[in-house]
Length: 307
Image 1 (tube, rainbow, N blue to C red):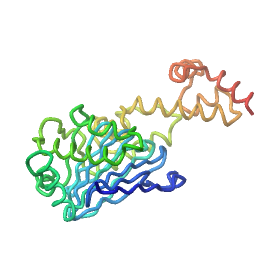
Image 2 (image 1 turned 30 degrees about the horizontal axis):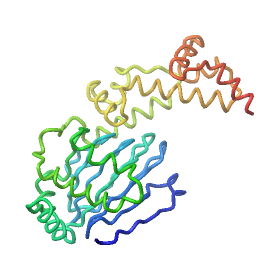
Image 3 (image 1 turned 90 degrees about the horizontal axis):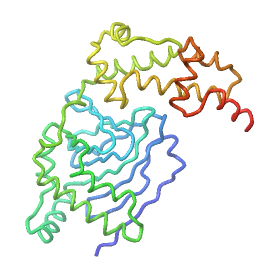
């Protein structure tokens, strides 16, 4: 059996850029790569482009990609994104989300014969990765939404014991190709997360405006009018980019900001409440306790005792 190579990358750089955590060469021209990006930082990295069939699985966090037609797609936990393009394009990790997942990178020119021969021997019929990529990625990229039929192929890879990792990774890649070969492209595909890039940029600006004005409770109607976008589009795009409705996202952001201020400043609870948009300190305390399972005053006492 072919000897596989295991590459360890410097984990200290995760705070600055997306890096490969581990890389396994499972077949000629075929690698499995474990990637990780820290939360609260934005990241960009390039797709391989011409001659590569790339498969991204998201275990945690989110990935975002802008297609050649200007539409933007986001994938989140459990989703799979397939890419086959003549051009290198940037894939990004939205700020605040982080990303942990696996990518399978297949250099078709090298992998075609190896996959053809192995699948003929094991499955009794050959699989052409080139034909597979062309069929599934007719619009440059395709997303398979979270579903147990595809998820089980990936999930065990995140916890496989190192002694068995070489053969197991190879087995999983073949299983993935078999799944995709029998995939019609309709069952789990959804267009719900495809938006034009200019719309996404508008929503990003709207989100920044909300954060810059955290001391105010800005209505969805007000926000939509300010940025010349319909409320329906604003709600839909915001949820799919940031993983939560506007109100839920901002409530969590407010509570996290309040927690930080309670632990790192000497501002009173009333002052902090005002900074995160609550005129009533008692209302703020009630909401904070609901989300953090502890009162603001309790957090402040712990912070003071530690310091």
